[in-house]
Image (cartoon, rainbow, N blue to C red; front, side, top):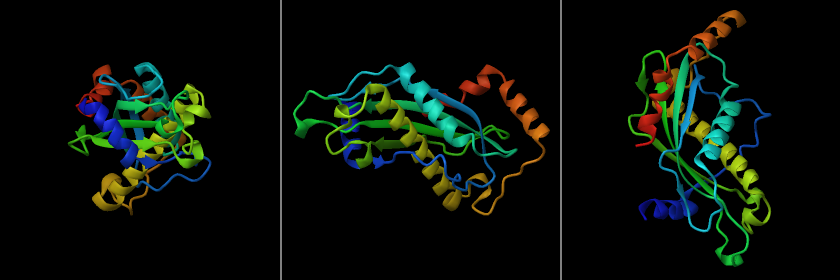
Length: 215
């Protein structure tokens, strides 16, 4: 009941974002590049009046959307994401128009400094996204989008909301060296070696950040 109430509240308080700006220059984040992109959904809750989606569908979609947005950043300084998908509503047709819910997605994010092995945020940041007016929200996207399209759009919007959160933390909390920091980028060969080192890390290193995010 508590988690269902959280989803209902999210419909009133969540941020709208489409994430349709990947063809534009990335927002400045300081000295930042994405290392591990870990997405889990151990406590996933389906909200009321929602189409069904599996945890695997959500983790795959969110992981892909995060990679598309943050793999654009290049630096030697790596940060890892632990993301837990907490709840969702996928609006469906077949109910009275006044009851048609907007689609919503809730995740919890933990950011880790890869080199230092420490969390930047001790408590996971809860981030909520709801479909925007441009996504058919006036009538509910259940009437205009397939279930797969809803999942994809919410995941893209979630990645955008994560970026906005990181921009705020960079500007006001000094994350990634603060707003004046510039990414340190060396040769393509060194970047390739860094990628190989990150890929070769033990499995424990890739799953560690996700556990705090699921709490």
